[in-house]
Length: 197
Ligand code: GAR
Image (cartoon, rainbow, N blue to C red; front, side, top):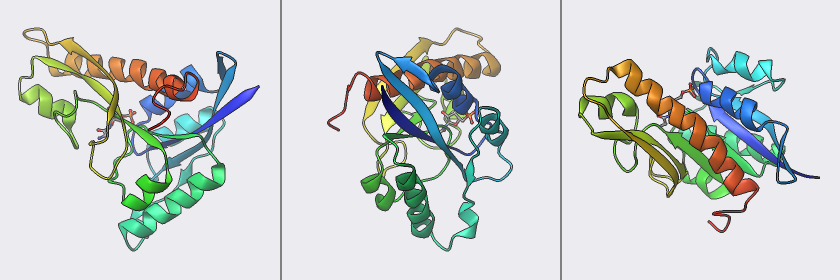
C-alpha cells in the first residue's frame, strides 16, 4: 500500500494537530495510507506537545529563541523535515514567519482562521470579530514567504448572526478549520489535486 507521510508544525494548544491525528493518522483513503511521522514545536510548554505524545509521536522541540537568526532556525527546521522524508508539511498554528530557505525547500500548507486575503497575521479571529465582518471562516493556503499570503486552496465561511458573541464566533471558525484542513491534506496527497503547485 502507498503511504503518504506528513509533518505537522505547531506552537500552541494543538487542537488542529489533534484533529489531524484523529481524522488522518494511519487512516486509509482510496488505498492511500496517511501517516503523521513527525511533529515539530517551537515552544517548550505548548499544549500540543502532550496531544502529540498521546498519539505516539514525540515532538521535536526547536526553540527559535536558541537560534542566532531566523535563517539558522529555518535551516534546522528544513534539515529535520528533510530527514523525515515527508510528502507534505502542515502548519497547524505554527506562529512563525518562514524564510525563503524554508519555502523553497519544503512543500507546506497552513491553516489560517480568516477568509484570506482578509485579516492576515496574529489574532485574526479577534480582528475580524472587531471589524464586524458579516462573513467569517477559515482558509487553507500554500505557504510562501509572505505571511498568510500563499495561494488559497480551501476556504469555508458562515454568515455571522446578529448578536453572535465572541465565543460562538470563535467556535464556528474552529469547527470550519477542523473540517477543511484534513480535507485539504487528503485532496493534495490522495486525490492529487493541486499537485503541480
Ligand atoms: C488556529 O486557529 C490556527 O488557524 C491559527 O492558530 C490557531 C492554533 O490553534 N493560526 C494562525 O493564526 C496562523 N496565522 P490550535 O493550536 O488549537 O490548533
